[in-house]
Length: 438
Ligand SMILES: [Cu+2]
Image 1 (cartoon, rainbow, N blue to C red):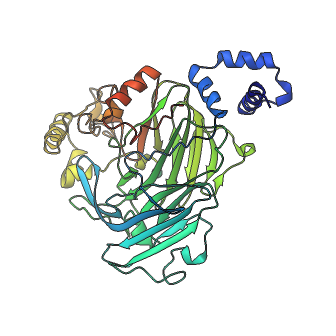
Image 2: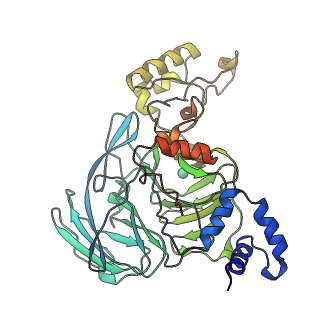
Image 3: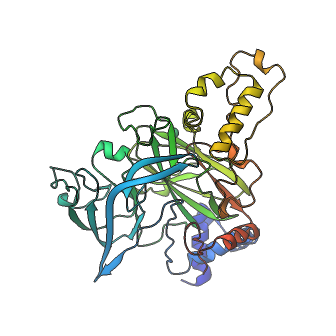
């Protein structure tokens, strides 16, 4: 098949049009009308498969060594001090100093060995969620193995014949709620079509941590801290995308609630689940996807519209940070206060945290006379400087006052702005720098 003809078939498939119905001249018009970035993407489709790793913002990848043809990973379960907001650090449990644990990325067909060490004060194990592997690798205490005692090692080894978004976690309920989970992504032997330019992963977790406490209450049914990849907004690192690129988002949930995750300004299709890639005939447009407990949802979309677009759980209580941590026993008082009193209280609290700024949206002159007031007034806290990083460069002043809880943003940036942020990142090739140049 000639190069032109191959591209024609691929483009026709990408546009979802009947191959026989498209003439070469119409195809040429389509290419002319496409933004430059999309045209580049199409060209990449004809190249041999280049590996585009997933980026897990705020969580590192787990490196591996090779032992012959076996990929060898080392995972240590251990307690982790985790800063989930500028004014809140909790005592979580995780792996290799990280909560959630570091992301494991392999390829379909890989032989994988995980040398696991338990540095927790109690027994544990590792379960490979969604993987079709022999029963003795399933990581369930007493059923498929003896629990791994504190100080002990255990070696898991299996061949990954699937592709998709999987995860590892302790197979002990309370340990799961202490944070013992991490991504296990199996990239397909042959690239998915259409290919994407950006691939991001988010792990959804919830925590019940009382004010002045640091240890999550794993038996609680009400949660006051909601995180993406172990941090609450505005500490979540924005996802950078190039205008005109195709984006994949893998969203993984392990907690007590199902989370309806909503994307602003764009429609997406669900291209996969925790079971792997979904056939294209099942894709339909949506912008809110319910990610149930123990599920993964993989969505893809074209980043068509420039801007800083929110992605967040839409449960109202999951779009908040726990003010109780700041206000403690004064919280009830605050709801009954005049504007001046509430404001001065917030300002003095902000200084102790430290925030560099307290945002205060205007209220009506007669606000105090309206039953129900205040609701969200006084609660917004700007902390732009406290959470500043290259990925937040160029956002409007006080942007952080609008970001709380299980929330992050996708920044759709024209090339010049995208490249300017990449240039600000000190160590290229890590964190969210993942654009593949070819
Ligand atoms: Cu939620």
